[in-house]
Image 1 (cartoon, rainbow, N blue to C red):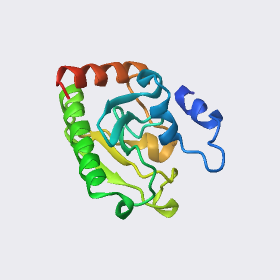
Image 2 (image 1 turned 90 degrees about the vertical axis):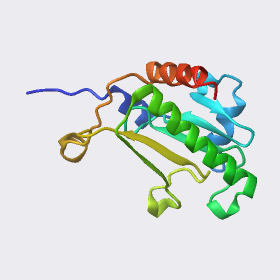
Image 3 (image 1 turned 90 degrees about the horizontal axis):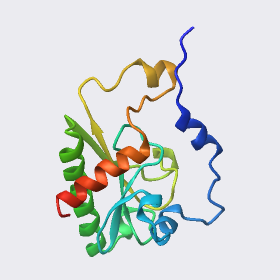
Image 4 (image 1 turned 180 degrees about the horizontal axis):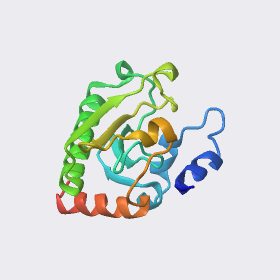
Length: 163
């Protein structure tokens, strides 16, 4: 019998959940340690963070600092800033990982897969052939690099691009 180990998954399962009314996306930028928070880039109204439980290697989230649940709740300035963060995230991922394509989007509401009520956009790099039987049959995702190594790689790229 073959064994495949997805060690990161247990961390996700055992991770403490935010208390009722808590907001992880508001708390992380206040830590004062962007490396511990996995924050890749900050702009005046939003930030980029490496997803701690990614769909694919390099999966980023663009998050407004102000907690809102839906797109119309953003001010015009916040919408523009968030879109700029999405573009910056795509630039960083392109330079660092050279993906073939991207999935970019929002999960608005729990029925759409939104697990955190603080609005955020997913920026997921994709490569030709990166989807196989593992997520479907094995209910397991295979990520080729640790979160710490991926963070260092993307942060270094962001600095070198002078973003």
